Image (cartoon, rainbow, N blue to C red; front, side):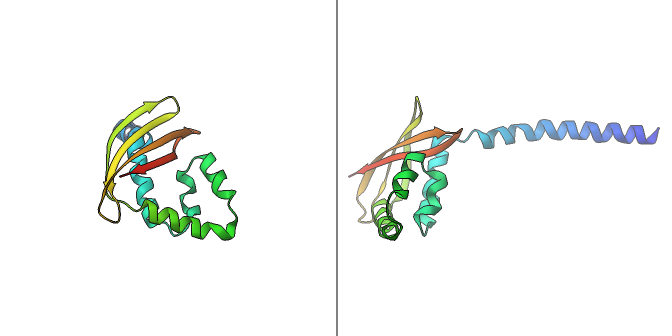
Length: 137
């Protein structure tokens, strides 16, 4: 009898834990395009080589980078880092599109000039990827 009672308690506890944990699991999977982009920018700022960013980039962007001779990639990445350095990044809006979302953002360039950006975030295989970015001051 005791083992049946103990088993019932364990099953009840497992059910309760399952109900409590289920929303947090779903929330982790329901990342917005904005949340994804903020994570990408953090990875961008820390990256030492372009290949570290491949998990965040669309297939088309990765293919374009892979089409660059390996010896030229470090210089290309240095230019990306120089041109892409931003502080005070703030995503102003997120608009859903047929293939993902378009973000409008602003920040400060290295010379402390305000810049605005349009970022295309696409869904590939159920995951967010950066399709393209365009920044101007």
